[in-house]
Structures are given as structure tokens and as C-alpha cells.
Image (cartoon, rainbow, N blue to C red; front, top):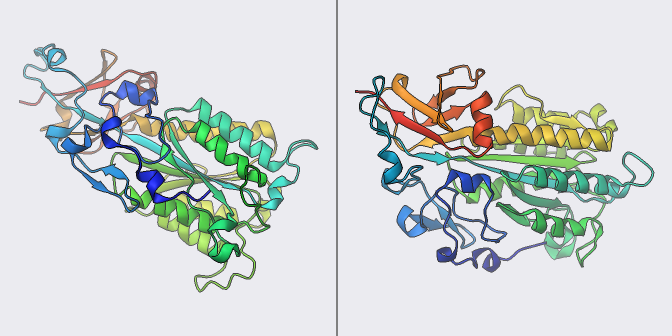
Length: 384
């Protein structure tokens, strides 16, 4: 469904200031708006500095140290009186990472074919699995892009993807479920055609993330769920075939100045033989790790397991924190979670902490699990 800028911009910024508590971020608190909200961990926009996005909404910009998230109150910091191994501790406030995912979901007519049994369509299987994944992983801020969407095309005809109908944000399961009602032309939504312009949907997702601007404390992802290769009937785009355009979009998403990782879920086992979707996933994966990014779903149970695997790997980014100021000496940091000392772990395999750069703290293993359970890390600089 096409959403006008006035709806996006209609949220009074003084009615929903983002929380300064990591616990509240994990709890997924929201002011109930579907469109962009101030960054989790930011102070009031007036204090942190802000600028309007292209649609007239408000987005936060990087805050200075004075306007950062302070994870401990003044009274709490009085507890840091020093010890033999840290005689003059200096508290370093943290800014929690935000994890966003746009689900790009195919609604072409082939999605109404039966998927894994004689009673469930591909659309129904995808819808059920996606809504379950959203409910099971509330710490991820989800958005939704449905394609194709004929009403967004010129003169209401042709091959195109719709705009992102639900921008990433907390507590969006109801909004996403409502938009998914358009899967077969219900709720007054246009009936989808045969084409599956996933290449154009990826572009819509990239442009939506770009409107938020570059934010080091954002980890952004796209989940592409489809049952066919990218198609556009009669497409004579100078950019190339729909498949080549999609591969190019996947590469653009993965480059350093964008940094959006994508996962591709195929609801048709025959797609493995065409190589297009696997090449799309590989084009994006080349900018990230060697972990799989292409998932062929063979039945409803496997589909649910695949989505859970994807969401669990995405949630690990919640264990990434920005330090408001870099430590004087990284070797003399004192990191605790839930009152327990966390040991340095450069390899990220032993449940300790590491710095991916001078101002980014990573927690792994059991320490990350403690953070996911709702415990807030504390960082002290113990250098002389």
C-alpha cells in the first residue's frame, strides 16, 4: 500500500522520546507508530540534534558525548570507587546497537500455488512462518516490502515493486500482518500479476535504508522471500535483465558505505537449478562472512527453522555497542555484564569482549547471551 509522506511525518517528536535504557530496547518498547522513530538510545531530538528526512520525518543524527546514552545514573557511578586492578576507573557510556530488517515478500500469482502440501499455498506458508518469526524475535525492528504492487506503476499498469509499506521499527507485527492481508488482493489492495520484480523490491529497500542516513549503531538486513527468479514482462531496461539488476542491487547493498546484509529464502525447490537467486545471495555475501545467505525451503517445518536460524544470527548484532569515547588503553578496559567480569576475547569465541574498532565493543558467547537476557554491560577505563 502506498503511504504518503504526511502519514510518515505525522508523529509529534515530543510525544515519543527514545529510551536511554538498553533494557527498554530489549523489551521492544514503542510509541505505536509504524514509521521512523528516533534512534533507540538517543536523547530528546532537540538535545541530540536532528534533521528531517526526505519524507519530512525526523531521524536522529550522531550525538556528541554530552548527549549520549549514559547506562548508569550518577548514584550508580559512585559505586565505581576503584580497586587494586582499577584504582581510578573512568566510566564509558554505551550506545546500544539497533537491528533492523525489511522483509521483501513476493505476492505474485504463483505464490497462490500449493507449497508443501495440498492445502497450504506458498503465500500462506510464508505468511505464517514470517509472523511467527517476528513474534519470536521482538528485539529486531521489522519492516515490510510487498511486491509486485501495480498501483505504484505509471498509470496503474506495468511491472514495479511497491514502496516499503511498513518502515522498520519496534512492535510492528500488527502493522505487518495487516499489510500481508494484501497477499491475494484482499482488503481493497490491487491484485498482483504474474511478474516477480524482486530486483525492484531490493532497490526500494536500499533507498528506504538510505533515507535514515549512515548510522554506525545500525545493523540493517533484508529478508527476500520468493518462489521465482526476478521477472518483468517486456522489461527492456538498459541496466540489463531482471536477474542481473538484482545481482547488482545485492552488491550495492553489501558495499561498505551501505552495509546491508540480505538473506534469500526460496519457496520453490526448482529455483536451485536456475542459479539466479543463489547468485543474488552470493553477490551480497561477498561483503560479509561465509555464513549461508541462500535458504531453499523444502517444507513448512524447514521454513520455520530457516527463519529462526536467520533471525538468531541477526540478533547477535544486539551485542554490539558504540563507546561514547574510545579508551585510553584498550588493554585496560574493565567490562562486566550482570555484575560478572568479562574477559577479553579477540577471537570472539570464548564468551568475552573485543573491540572491532577503538569505539565499538563486541560481546560474544555467554556474555552476549546475558545481554540478550536483558542485562546491561558496564565499561570502565582503568588506564592511568
